[in-house]
Length: 372
Image (tube, rainbow, N blue to C red; front, side, top):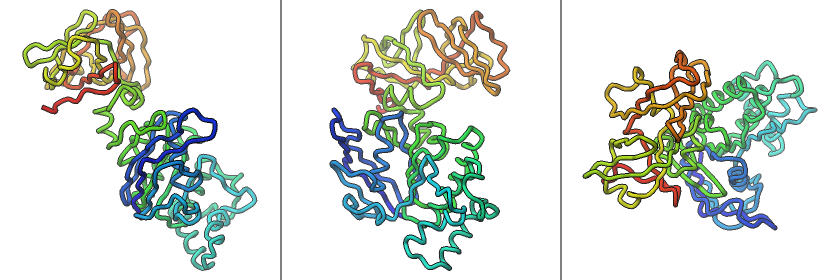
């Protein structure tokens, strides 16, 4: 196992107007599972490929277990990589696919057989060793790709969107398999994905990237509850956070947000924290679960009452999403799947004033709360 440390890592491609990756710095602890999360083109896969040695580094340093590896060939970095496309040899059996990397490295045949047998048992592939990849399902092929990495017994595992080609059921199954293997192996793992559910459920920490830069690093729930800016607020969470143009007023030490016909006192905010934006427009943020029908509101929460008209109803089974027009701004509300609310109805909502966020539209950054 090893610590992976990136220091101001930058990648520039020829004839590109801006870096694909720009000054990325992060340390992944020994045995830690960290996801690089972001939209397509944000630089997360390029960062992973530089760690693997598949892309040259333009600037910055990569350290693995304290060793600078910028100029170390990929084969000598003691890293195993699992790709989106499985990358299995179609003419080989599953056993041969699992053993191929070890045989190329000159590992003794008895050791190869022992490792292949152990990995196959671990991943439920023992009955499939004589078959070829074309006869396996997508989930089974991805388990073979994972097994081929496991038999290497590397210091670091790298995953490049390994679940993207799977259907929903197989994605869940394989996701759980990767979680189990990390718990069992305790090897350092870096996982690239654009899927926030994968990042939230699998990772010990998430590194969110946008435009080639790191936007925020932290534990999944910490980032969800305290997004650093409007990009993170919109990107992490489904549906995303409601962001409403509003004006802030200070009443003594208290803070009030005004939007449409509503004046919402904000629990947990202090006038000094919003002094820099008081009197001008801000973005007032509340997640869909921060709004509730009166009977479902937390009895111990400080709430404000909003009223509006339901314009869209999206039943999803266990929950229902309502799009509500508040007389100008619209919000999405997450309610119980048994809700009988219909389009066109007037609805009363309770807003949890302690679950609010304030963003400066000029910088898109979140204002810190509770720092005083």
